[in-house]
Amino acid sequence: MSQRLMRFDDNASAWPPRDAEPGSVRQLYIHIPFCAQLCPFCTFHRVRYETDRTMTYFSALRHELAWYRNRGFRFSKLYIGGGTPTVNADELESLLADVREFFPLQEISVETNPQELTEPALRMLERSGVNRLSVGVQSFDDDQLERMGRYQTYGSGAQIRERLGAAQGRFDTLNVDMMFNLPTQTAESLDDDLSVLADELRVDQVSYYPLMVAPAALRSVRLQMADDSGRETAGREYEFYRMIRSRLTSDYGMGSAWCFSRGDGAIDEYIVDEDDYVGVGSGALSYVAGVAASTTFSIRGYVDTMAKKHSPTVRTRQLQELERMRYDLLVKLFALRMHKNVIEAKYAGRFASSLRKELLALRLTGALRDTGTSYELTEKGAYLWVILMREFLNGVNALRAEMRHRIRGELRELDAMPKSTRENAA
Image (cartoon, rainbow, N blue to C red; front, side, top):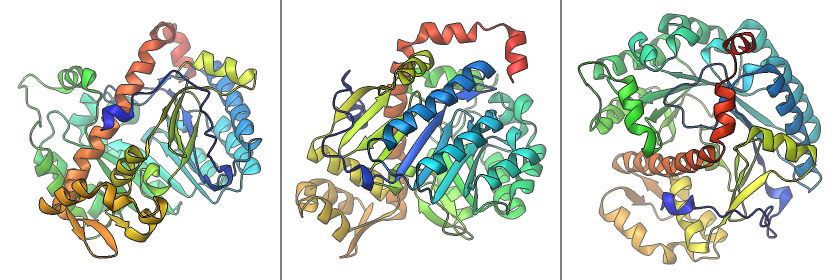
């Protein structure tokens, strides 16, 4: 299903959809594609940070935000991801002030990395009204950090723990992104990471993702991160997931199949929390009124388009009703529970009858429990949904890979930037 949903058409005329109700779309996503360090396993659209290019990009973002405001969109939730959104703190602070002026924001989530957890950056995020800070850690194990190319850039596991400690308690939710099923990862190193999170730091929220790489790149990533012994964790995903769930659920509630929270913090997948969302920036995805859309992945093209005050959307996909139902089944049950009255009202009472085969199969396999008022995932079902969401997101990753292939010349040009320029920019 995921691969089919990601087959977009080169057609921007369907955006925004005619059936869209701009005032009802609450979630805004802003993509900042710049990073000082490009990690080998990262599947998101990202390029090396360069000061002038980044400044121009932030200016273009403001034009796109105005484009949506002028069409009646009034977002109340904001999620800023990347890339590394905090790579230029001054520009981010200015952008956040503009977005708060444009829209009636009530919640702001921002992604960052351990290197950016400096006192000036934390103070900036606090005064900008950020409610939730999500830090990409992946592992505290120095060996794993070395293999991921993160040790030299983001520091040792001990240094990362110290920086997280300084950020704890300053936001409504401090989320830590971790990864499992990494090549060469062992049960012992995973257990050590869990001890740091649950016993030492006691962070507000943990999102534990399985390794997700577009299929075409998976082999190269495994080779790059493996050692001479050829060890890897293929086939151990379920074992590792059970370790994570067993260790964290004693102190954390489950907000989704891979997100664990001590309180009521937002779950890490904003697509689960809202029916519709709008993504702005180069390489951003949107989903409104059954239409999925993608903006251009060309940084240069995005800036030029926004200078003309046109939409940067270049590809769309109109989902038919049955596809929309299956999409909702996937993303809503990822939060472990779906209320029957809500989903049936959305589809005029046709949801259960249209998906009767899928729902029956899930119940017979022990993945789904029907309480009468809701559908709920069992423990077995939660892991199944980890697999399904991973495959769905791998479909998204394949789309990103295809779109980046279209601009490979531009990406090579950025990679060819003189080393001295990169160092000054970083």
